[in-house]
Amino acid sequence: GAVLVKREKLAQVGTATGLILIPLVIENTVLGVLAVCCHPEVVRDYGERSSFYNAVWAELTLAMAVAVQGEVAILDRLTGMHNRTYFMKRLIEEIERATRYQMPLSLLMIDIDNFKLVNDTLGHQQGDAVLKIMAKLIRNAVRAVDLIGRYGGEEFIIMLPETGYGNETGSAGGAAVVAERIRAAVDEEFRSLQRPLNLTVSVGVACRRFPEDRTMD
Image (cartoon, rainbow, N blue to C red):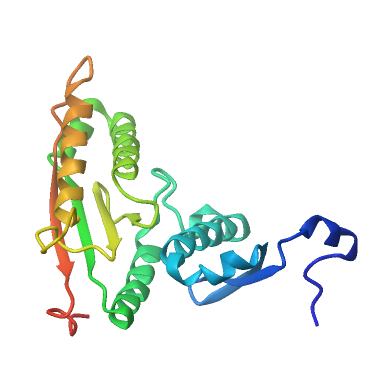
């Protein structure tokens, strides 16, 4: 069998006699296996907090992929967001997971209004700066479990797992709430500059509900 803990390190384990093995999978490739020594109670409660742990493992896997394959393979160089190819592969996987666990899934498509005017009047360097600011604002408006991608030149796309539109019974929030949060943040950010750009975004919202849209691919 494989040796997961060196003999000289056993004393440091102490009461962490539980073990969780997590395969780090990205684009159908196993990059490695994470061995977590933990208290047995963590193992017992793992199922109840699986969404949280899965989000953590996904981020660790991404970090390893970047270290092994380089940023070009997965991330957009300018904004640091996921590139379109990686995003679409993850979207297919998340649709399958949503179907399996009968959970809703939402997408936001964000387009910067009249972005060509920014490039034409201020130059491409300033246009790139705007895209970087936009990326920061979007990250601040979503959860760690949400996936953000750069879809095109001035278009961004966000995947919101386990999230409905926002008008469901008992829903405290949803995709429409996130969309409005991003729209307001962008409006506030660019109007507060010394030289206001009056930059705005348009946000499209699509929701795959359950069970209504169970056949949607």
